[in-house]
Length: 169
Image (cartoon, rainbow, N blue to C red; front, side, top):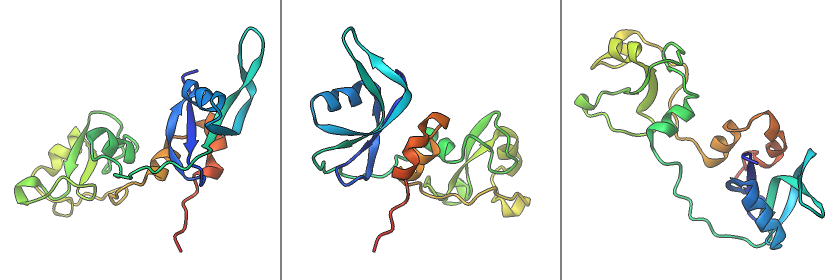
């Protein structure tokens, strides 16, 4: 029961993930409804079997102040899928400032990338263009939905319909 359950607000927008235990409590207290369940597994008690939740929706709207994704080392590496953005390596990873801090570069989503120690050392106190290093992808600020979508494993395919980017009109 170490799996995660997708938690949706009343308007079907993704809020977060929670543990199976937390989802079961929300369902038992009738604070949420079950939208998707694992057909192969169930939670067995002495007297009955409960469905194994994959997606639950709160029955009352909860106002969640959105602060955005925190700028942390772990989140930068997660955004970059734990790969060097120069050579694709997955070993000896560090963070690299595209515009070095010594030249006024800030620690922002758009200036930080994941790089292996070798490429970071090669780049040194210069920009990637000065050393002819090409980025695999341009750095960006991720959204909550993209972070949740990227964390999906094969068993979480039930989440996909609920994680579509919403178009604002």
